[in-house]
Image (cartoon, rainbow, N blue to C red; front, side, top):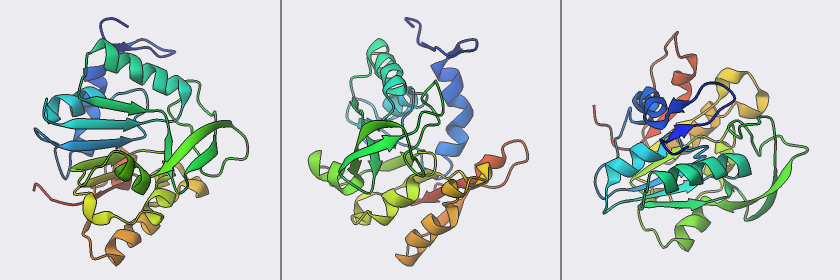
Length: 221
């Protein structure tokens, strides 16, 4: 919408309001700053894109990757309406292959659909994280946020250029109880096996999913 509301099947809410609720999770270990390069993997409908864009400023870039057509349409509309000129959009899934994969259609909003454990779905393009760094000629990503409904393990296990990502925020989904989304432990083990420090968000009874957030990189505490 013109005043930058997100349109749901329930009352609309301002993009800035929705984003502010999750900043304590996304920026627990690192906050993007002026000139940073940000990768938003699983950008969804764009609830974080305004905040990312504002923080990196004119000298920075925000790369948003989202495979779901409906979610991507809303993401694109927000970027256009809010005139976020430092944002680059690509309608793809990020995973462990360069090719075409199936994306589930579990949500009419396009916000909880996934590529892991999917037997049927729509066909969407997928690229590996290494491929994206090469295609965009990026030597360093200052902050990478990943929220892809259990698809994080294939991304991490097939990635090779760990030195090019300075700070990670990975939203695992173990709290759902779905066996296809139990990734917190194996994802953490990949990073620790490479000598990288892994931190977790403290548990909260009000937000039980918070403790499934993994952080790797430079601590601001």
